[in-house]
Image (cartoon, rainbow, N blue to C red; front, side):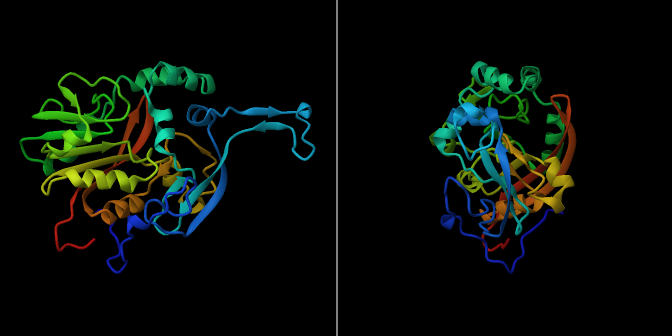
Length: 308
């Protein structure tokens, strides 16, 4: 059964969420009951977003009170004791996100990441081959859908991993990467989305990347019709699965995934923005040849008169 909110708790109003560059509230539920621990921003991310590279400090710097050694970009791991959400304290601006995701996994992106993370090019080539568990996604969603299936993949990159490609009456892709989409798909902007009628909106492996996930879900809710399904998929990170009693102290570095959800925190987020979870599943699979654990949620608009 999906996790659910305590009906006696007043849902948080995201209009009151502080949108600071360094978070002081949980961006999932609004709580200020946070634990923190020092961490570093991985060198590739710091370089790609800010142009900051690691430095080696030695005696030639002339710093009398700073010890010699390697310096990396520091940050904090934050953990919400209310909903179980683990996240990076830095909340990237739209310009910073563009720096990171423009031509995502293109040549410049891949070359820079290979410089800091040898072996990434091989992994990237496997990722470009697409996921192998699309059939499992379709099996999860099929009982909740009826024909005709009209799909919008929100953050779907090229569309190669979108479910129901062959069965869909049409397949639209909304994504900031700017990469060409697969044959049969169409790239759309928000104006075009508002004029279309979708029975399935896919938001797969997106919410772990965005600074304010409620903003994205509110945008989706605007175009989610009453009988449509929103499919959310996120990685259920190893630190969440196996170290829940030691968070945030086990998380010492941050990469592209700046949000680590538990089922409780993701369900609370979905319900607070006015939707409900109708099905949930944990999927054990492989991604790019490595074991992966994914959390799958099927959601719909909460009907008028219903409470979370």
